[in-house]
Image (tube, rainbow, N blue to C red; front, side):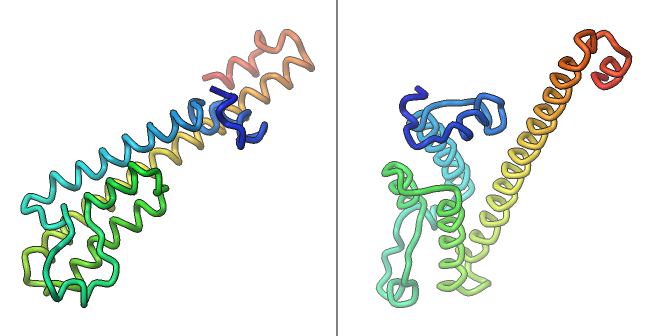
Amino acid sequence: HRICDYNLTEEEFANYENGLNGEYSCMLCRQNKRRKYLLKIIKIAEDKDKDRWFQEEYDKEDYRRIIKSPMYFSKMKEKIDQYLVNAELFKNDFILIFQNAFDYNKPKDRPYKEAEKIHEFISDLLKRKKEGLERRQMESIEEQEHQKWVRECIKKDPNFLETSEYIGSAM
């Protein structure tokens, strides 16, 4: 699938080959994987939305007067299906759903309270996913640096792998 990524630079491709950007897959495969992941996050949010407040566009006359940019889960799914979303837009759409609920409802109203719960849950989930990704990237970078160091040492001393310095670094 390397040929599918005509916009991917050699450096970016090398990062994939070295595990820095995760396992390589072509642009279409990555988009499909991202699409499934984002839809899974929405499904989790939908399952938390027991009363279905945020599933579809809210159809009340005064709602459109108060809320200028409506957002709801089915609209988010449409955007994903049309490949019109990236991680930042996805996060912003979630924020917009909950901000609209806060702007339209009063703190004592059920939709407001549900929005608070779901917002907190999804924010924590996305934060944990991001931290996990960053940790895996750092581990990959550290492993790459170690492998580079070992290769340089082998160039200097072909028997390096048998030395106590290497054995100590591998533990």
